[in-house]
Image 1 (cartoon, rainbow, N blue to C red):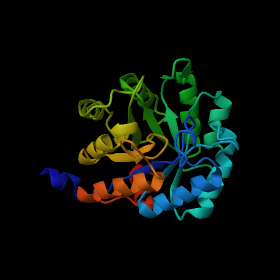
Image 2 (cartoon, rainbow, N blue to C red; image 1 turned 30 degrees about the vertical axis):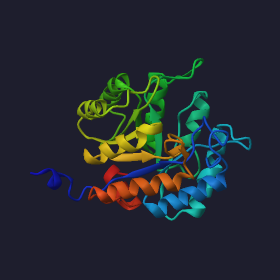
Image 3 (cartoon, helix red, strand yellow; image 1 turned 90 degrees about the vertical axis):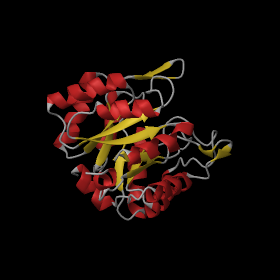
Length: 277
């Protein structure tokens, strides 16, 4: 079977991460922070081909806030047609705040699941103990919330395999391979290939790369038969020296890349079928 035959019929899931919990309008004024503006950009991204929106909440001052996830989810459902909502359960907050991401009403169809700690800056470490990871995974399974497994480095690949062995995950395991600075995996094509080769059987993968690495490594993911995540949580620039005008600009470019590689973007319905939601 040839390479094109291998990829034939395999659609690409495009996730947009519109806003995170770290940088905001002080870094780029086009980063959406409040529920209405997050939802407006999510709607435009859905029209351009995004089938999943990764969601963070921010308070009225733009600070990360799990308590605002409900308002953001409600605004997205009001404005979007069918996009899959994926709430965050990450961050430095205590467990009872992070679990808010899978307790909004109605519960989201998906949620992120960090499987280990990583450093942020000089004085912050995002801590995810095995006990808390398993608690989150157990509640997601009980309530049919599909986890996206966040793998920030090779050690987290080991944690992924251990989590699979616990039986708390259902196939297909949806794994987000993350590349960037600090304790993230070093962003290089070789490391993408290595990470993909070390995934457990039954895994479906997507690639997230920060800053200038977003475009080349997500393109590589498409070439490998994987999926992609783009957006202003991970990258504030369209190209070097040119701030992005918003999430739709980044999504539109990725949609063009996918089309130029003779692949189709998955609709929300196709995304649910691929991931078993």
